[in-house]
Amino acid sequence: MASMTMIQALRSAMDVMLERDDNVIIYGQDVGYFGGVFRCTEGLQAKYGRSRVFDAPINEGGIVGSAIGMGAYGLRPVVEVQFADYVYPAYDQIVSEAARLRYRSAGDFTAPITIRMPCGGGIYGGQTHSQSPEGLFTHVCGLRTVMPSNPRDAKGLLIASIENDDPVIFLEPKRLYNGPFDGHHDRPVVPWSKHALGNVPEGYYKVPLESASIFRPGAQLTVLTYGTMTWVAQAAAEESGIDAEIIDLRSLWPLDLETLVASVKKTGRCVIVHEATRTSGFGAELAALVQEHCFHHLEAPIGRVAGWDTPYPHAQEWAYFPGPARVGAAFRRAMEN
Image (cartoon, rainbow, N blue to C red):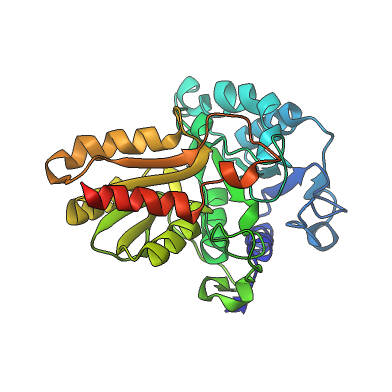
């Protein structure tokens, strides 16, 4: 085991897979010589050469489109979109080509590509560097959507994604790159070196896709969440004194429905928390699934806490960002019913 930030854990995953599989290649904007805007690929080009780790033009559609073609011919591209906010020029390639290729070719071709992209707010990035677009991908048949909340999961999930024959949207909450974040922006940052989940195996291992984690056991209510909100929910539980069981989805779609249902049936209450905007957010799908599978066990209405239905506001970031006070209030409402 080694102490790693999430950046180092992601880099370690790519290092492991570049060494294990000659078909793995990595490219994107500034990921080669520069090592990526967040340094996730730092040193990999020097180690593996410019034919396996290289820079691409500022052309998200071209990056993803070329990766689909490479994947169809046997490579396993891992491409980086510099920020999730920049993925929209590539959306047609992802939806119309990558997600449909297996079906359209009757299984003759697949798109074993992994598309990494930093997402989420909490970094004063404003509307063009803070978005959480996961709902745009979970809606699309043929895509896998993954979002880790800590370095140990990040490495194992990325390795599993690279080895998977389906296209994987791998969303990385950039507010967690260097340490867990509980939503208290006015407090000092806690580094991953001071947290158990910053201890990461140095070699090869996988965290299975479609597996949720019971992040915090509890008995009074269930919290369904992922990414940065996992830590915010934990802070809300501690500050409110409510014994919440926090389920970190990890794999948003396909979903570990069994773990979610078992928890809600046990506690009888459910609050869903995500950073993305509320209307048509992934939380709506989670609420529908809980209603469908746990209706006779629910003791209170399902609660949702999410970003507001506005562009991400730079000047009002902490009014938009779902913090522990807003999440804790939802916990109390669930317990009052």
